[in-house]
Length: 118
Length: 116
Image 1: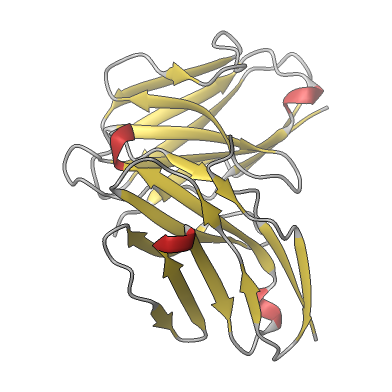
Image 2: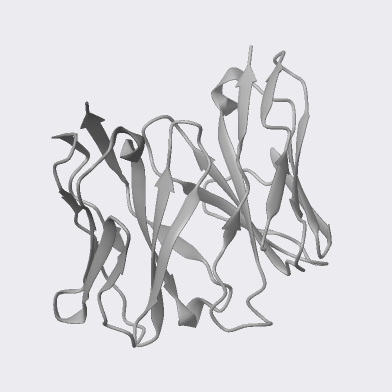
């Protein structure tokens, strides 16, 4: 159980394009989803925390207008990279959890999206 | 201040050797959870273990074992008789109950290279 599907797994697009990444919890309700960014040979950097039905909480230094996060349902969160540029190229990973239901539920991770902006 | 420290950046071992990955954490919470994840070259994060702060028992799962010592704030991970398929980046992570949303703080990761 606890499967998280992330789509697409790989995106290559031109500079200036907006790219949407979906994160779905397939068999549980995810009240909280996290979005991470990972550069090569580095750790996961938390970008934002999204709670279903409310605005996402962004980490310091992450541009809200650049990385739009929507968590409209208990099973879906989306990250839109607006007007992407080459410096936005990275590996983006989402995770989902339901901290309200059980006190110590772990995060379940998607397989990640490799974004390459030309 | 970094909450999770994984000091060894890259570790190379010859196949069948044992390898131990160190993880030192920092928290003021009395209730917290520690995790290890494996990230193979394909990129996905594979959950290996979760340990809560009240359970200091060591654990063994196949060739994997974990040593949790609250006295030294460490949660070390050992791979016994390493295999080429163990080549990956391994992340230690901490979740503090006080955060309330299961937020994870990751260490920088250990790149393990198993040489055949």
